[in-house]
Figure (cartoon, helix red, strand yellow):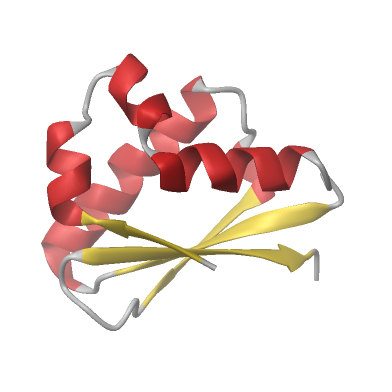
Length: 90
């Protein structure tokens, strides 16, 4: 899987820099090579985590990934980390 840290995200909140984050570039390329799968996004619990994951999924949609291909689940294990996996559709 892939890990995105809060401080990376804070520095990268404009479109060009978000795409320059290696973790997102790798994730999107991996997904593009197998679009039968979906992107699982594990985010920190609590209000901040909810806000972060909504903002992140909005960016991914704006980059052309349909929300049908994303599933979000709370519980990334740390307050400042979002984890990604590419999983089979249920």
